[in-house]
Image 1 (cartoon, rainbow, N blue to C red):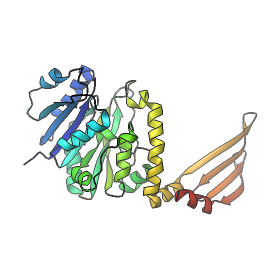
Image 2: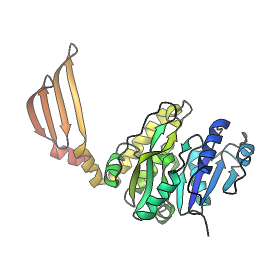
Image 3: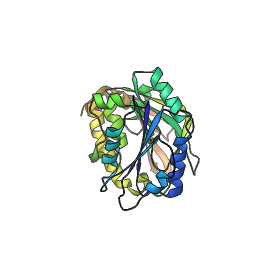
Image 4: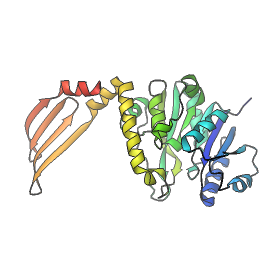
Length: 288
């Protein structure tokens, strides 16, 4: 009989102190029925000695013979996993002691939920995440943003297997966002509304050093997510509020506020003068 949870952590040129902090945060979990799969994707920069300095039978260290990249490495970890639940984790972040316990408890109690994440805090700047909690709000948010913090998430493995969904190289380095969007029609999502995860925000993060590639991947994800989920996308459009302001010599002269199928115009940004319905235009956009 396999473990309840597989913790999946790819490693690539990780600083020793960051790697040790990450490993120790998992070994200190209050929930203990897990395997800890660590996959080193940098053959010429050995981290094996660091990992094997921890004498814990739950740690299983693997090393790619050649550099595969983050997306194939994540998929390789999924194939190796034996747990019912997959706890996603990155090599320089920190999971608080009750993270696994509370995520497992939620998935056990809600069999219709396939992905559960948590609220997070950045390690250096102490910023808190502000993602929606419930399934419907998360799916609406996914129309425009990655509303589940990837490295805080736990996934029901059976959902990935049943629907043959994996990380996709073409959307890297936003492969996590694409994965959530592929799962929208197949399962429910939830974010635990408490901080159970600390994210290390630094210049080496993918979000910093691959900004342009990430932006292009995000545009590609937006293209498929609205086509695959037209009803959710149309509701997203209905809720979205867009404000455009026109200025003369630095002063606001005219302001348009568009929400759903209605546009309102305001003189000096205060006096309502115009209301116009965009019903046909928005419906056409939602069905593209």
